[in-house]
Length: 293
Ligand SMILES: [Mn+2]
Image (cartoon, rainbow, N blue to C red; front, side):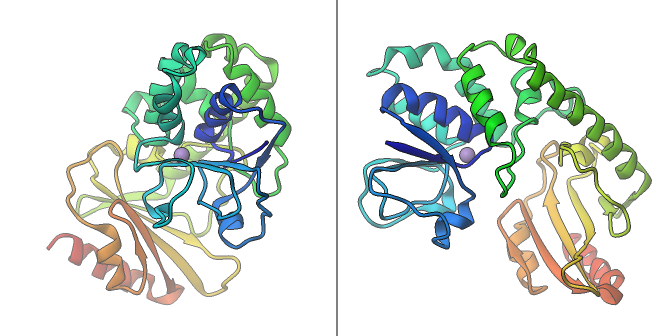
């Protein structure tokens, strides 16, 4: 059977676990949108994990609230911190070799569930650090690395995995990107009405990986952040993103509902709108007023 996963840290851990449960002959990688749009051809014997359901598949394992389906299927679906956690809990009694991966499962729940401490962002260690080397790319240029890392996860020891030369090379790239991003955030951010506002319209963000939660760690007192980014494909328009801090979880605002008033949307914790560049100051002023109500 072929396994199709989304290539993020959770997807690779799903792959490690499902290989112990099913006879997997090949692993393929897809982004959610390609499954939904039918651009990725799902075949009758395929197993799908950490991705939306497709009616052709034989088994489906997922945890994303937005992917719930009304019809019956074979597999496990539940809103949960990670898909790997669902698979581990569902099969560990039947497949005792899974039992030894309790720590990896716990870490995958934290990483995929976006549970980070200040220290996990500023000075990540172990599986947090390893997870930053997995960067989903639609062109699948890292597919060989995802295969390698899935095999290395079998070691069940983050310290040993980090000693692999390819993992280490990618960790060094991440740390360099992170240093650069830190300088960019500090140079382009300010606090307005207690809210972090970062203007990235004219800066190039690092190519390599970096932790998108870094601004929260640099401004830990801020509950919400607003960021402005250019939209190269739409000249004259910019994207304004609003998100709750992952460190200071005291805001009860529903970001998606608020942004609907501005023609955008999102979920409770994060969302975005697109506005003409020349209206950005006005819209940000209105947003700040709405938030402080
Ligand atoms: Mn996931």
